[in-house]
Image (cartoon, rainbow, N blue to C red; front, side, top):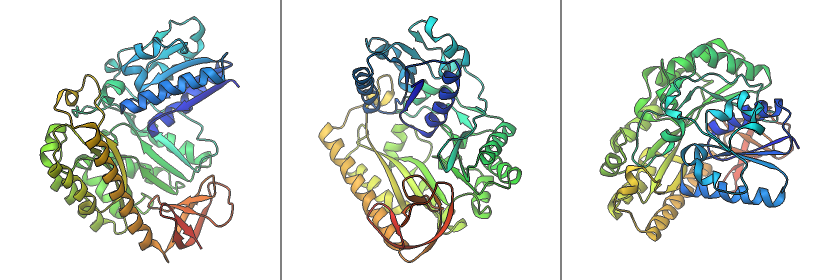
Length: 406
């Protein structure tokens, strides 16, 4: 073993883990395990700490390096762990010089992430063994939702220049990836505009078969993005929305920039522009001050927006955020509301899967004997196929979570 990277959290972390493998591996480091952490919930931080202890038990002689958002926002909690050898910030983890001088560095190297003003393409050679590649277009966030600690882990919003993104996408295609996913912390804040970037990619990289977007904030979706969804068949009809709640007062207390009606109107508009589009959404259960009636409006939002794939987050108070100082909902109530939201999501997914039976779909194969439709729905294939192949299949049924090919 030279450098092993354990990735937690988002797709952006997955991209940066590839950079870590390249930069750390190029130095000739041996016996090193890097944990690229997430800080979005207290549970994510706890999982990282548990993994540190597990790795130390299993690999007593390994050098353990902790980095990522949890290391950026709370480096001392990891520095105090006797199992940890080094703690690196989110900017430091991408530095070849840091990795080259790791043995001589201080235990903690975490800089001021708010001072970082630029984002650049990582010039990766693709994601080996994967049908799709992730390309970072943006980092950081200028918004300050009251529940969210991520801006303090990622800094302010900054965009990768269009030409660099296009070059990265082209490089991914040249390395055999049939599909590219644009990722970042808040990609709809991309400047000069996410829609313009999407159009430029599709125009400049004609050999790209599929382009996807990671999570978007619908209030920032520009006219060019909507136009691309309506008219660019290679832009996939699957959008994951940062919704968070379905009640207007809770949305205001979250310091979100949309209201319930805005979310519903956006989904209706996109569905008119792109029939067959599928929506996912993030919803928080048990935000401070949430009453039963407020929660019911979040449940109803699943139907009102026609969501198919739900990511449910029980509210997790993050120290230093305004929401942590608000009147909290009892833990058992939060847990029950999260359970009910997940059950609602499972029902919505089941309804969608039932409606797909008998349909013809074009899937891109992945490892493990599955493919993904244009709507990102997994399909269990009836025979092993190497990753990165397009197949036209008929949907014979489903198992409650994925479609089954005929």
